[in-house]
Image 1 (cartoon, helix red, strand yellow):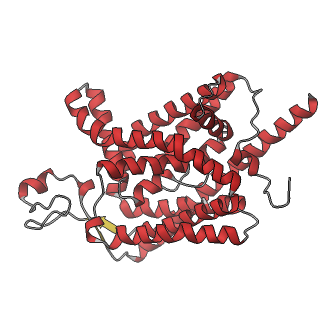
Image 2 (tube, rainbow, N blue to C red):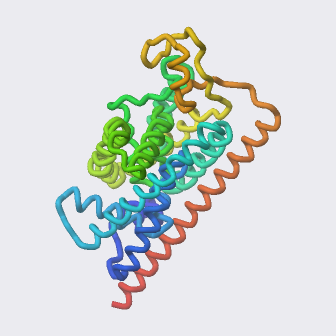
Image 3 (cartoon, rainbow, N blue to C red):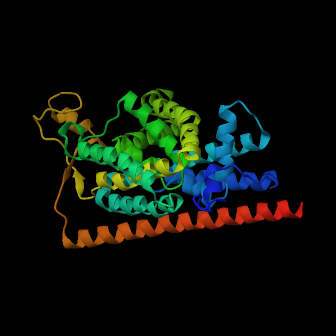
Length: 358
C-alpha cells in the first residue's frame, strides 16, 4: 500500500471482500445493517453507509450493487442486497410517522440534534481524505459552495419557505438520497431535508402505511402515486446509476471526490438553523404553493407539517439545550463511525489470516 493511500481504503472501495462467511451469518449481518440503515435514512445527519459499515456488510453491499448493475447474478450478492433493501424499507415504513411528528412538533430540538449528527460524519470523511492535498481542498470548495447557496435559498427565499413536494423534486430527492448511501458519513436524510422534501416524504410514507393497515385502496392511491412512486423510482436510479458513478470517482479521483463529499457535509449544516417554528398562514393571505387566498376552509384542512416556518430568537435555555443536543449528536455519529472502522479493520485482519492459512 502506498503512503498516499489511507489504511481504511479497502472497505470503501470494496475490492476485497471475504466470501467464506456462512450464508446465515452473512444474512444476519445484512438484516441488522438494513434495519440500521433504514433508521439512519429517517434521521438527517446519520449516514446509512455508516450503519452498513458498522454491521460489517458495507463492502458486500457495494459489490452487490456493482454486480447487479452489470448483470452479474451471484447468490451471495443477491441475498445481501435483498435482505438489506427489505429490512431498510421495513424500518422506514414502520418509523416514518414517529420521526416526522417529532420534527414537526419539536423542530428546534430535532434540528439541533441533526446538526451534531451531520458534523459527526466529518471526522470519518476527513480521515479517508488524508493526506489533504490541493485536490481535496478544491473538491471541498466545489462541494461546500452549492450547499451553502441551496441552504440560503431554502431559508431566505419566501417561495421556498414551505416544503417542495412536486413529483420532479421528489424523484430528484430519491436519486440524491440513494446516492448518499455509497459513502459512510454522508446522510441521505439530510439531503431530503435541505431539498425541502423531508416532511412530505415521511408524511406520504406514513399515510401509505396507515392506509395499507386499514386495507383502504382508495386512501393508498394518493401517497402511493404522489410520494412513494416518484421517490422509489429515484432511489432505484440513484442506487443503480449514481452509486456506480461515485464508486468509480472514488477509485479514479479519490482525493477530489472525498473533498467534495466533505464540503457537502460541512455546507449541509448551513441549512439546519434550528430556531424556526411552523406558523399557520393568516386568513386573506395568498398561499404561495397554489396561489389561493387562505380561507377558513383551507386553513382547517392544512396540517401542521405544511405550515411555512419562521425564525425566532431563542432563550438562553434553548440556546444551551441546542448546543448540548448538537454535542450529543456529534458524539453518537462519531462513535458509530469508530465502531464501523473497528469492525472493518477486524474483518480485514480475518481475511488476511485466512489467506495466510491457505
